[in-house]
Image (cartoon, rainbow, N blue to C red; front, side, top):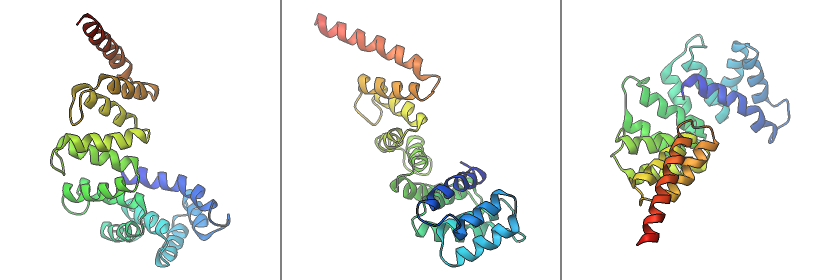
Length: 223
């Protein structure tokens, strides 16, 4: 997920998060409304004031404005500082954004190990996107030692959280016995979940797995 997508996801979700814990006209809601209406200088001033007061949501959104070059003195390093402060407050989207910055080399060089560190923090805090990123790093040996058992662990977390790609990959691991014991019934379960969630290849894998399960059953009956 890129910085633009992260910002828009935050702006869409924040009004719902704020309305449950604050009055409708809370300052952060007004700042978000100003941004959504294109009043960027007003939004920036509000986010800056709230960020100085320690508001993690404001720190995150102000960082995204830096990354999108929407401020007179936009700075990637300023964005990094804001994101690190928000992440220190447990704001998961900030952890994900820091992982992306290191992965993409936005801070001067690509640093996959640091990216994995931030993705791991997000994953441990329940982020499905973070869990997919961590699982992929272990699966590919990119930013972390190749470890199929760890890949399976994090894909399982993300699959349980509803990520269709993780559901398909976990099914494949069970099908082939990579990082987990080979189990065609669990492979079928996760291919079925992926198919129900719209994966185009999963229905074909389901048919294939059904044939193999039936073949195994017939062999056992004939033994």
